[in-house]
Image (cartoon, rainbow, N blue to C red; front, side, top):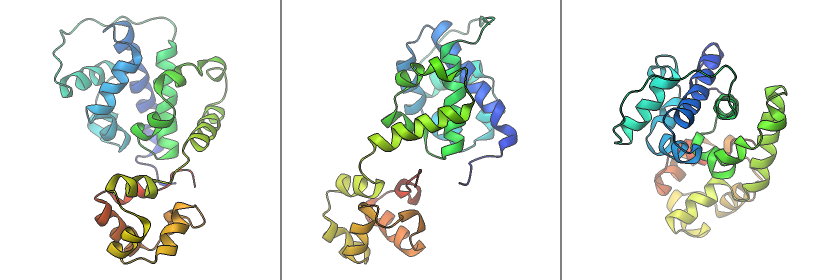
Length: 214
């Protein structure tokens, strides 16, 4: 797995995301699902996950929270943050998700689609007392159980194309399309020209067709 940024920055990223959620919930009084939705929709989640250093190491969690609001078109008076003695469950959720996003290489939006933030929050017990690898393993199990369709099939359906139509437009054998969608072949190992052709026809990025946990 190729990570979006070097591991040396990971702990800073985890701290920033954890503090962002803690501040948003306890100081700004947002419900965690509501603020996480803003984080995803604002474009900040995408930039953060891709290793944008302005966000990753250039901002504190509090600054990150205000950046989310700014990019969401929400004006909010700056307040003095409260610093709790103990890390909250919300802090842990952000801290853990930041690690999982880095480790798995998938977007925060993809993660949230199959394991919503509120469910992650509910995993605080017992996982906050365990090694982070056990949280990663649990997330992988949930993701694989719930994601029944491949990204290729999902994007083909969005485009309103049959397998035959996609094969003809992309210049790829229909059997190959079927094998990718049935996971008989790993699309992550597909020929580059195939991935380029598919992404052009489906109007998406090559990365949108990748299967993260294969």
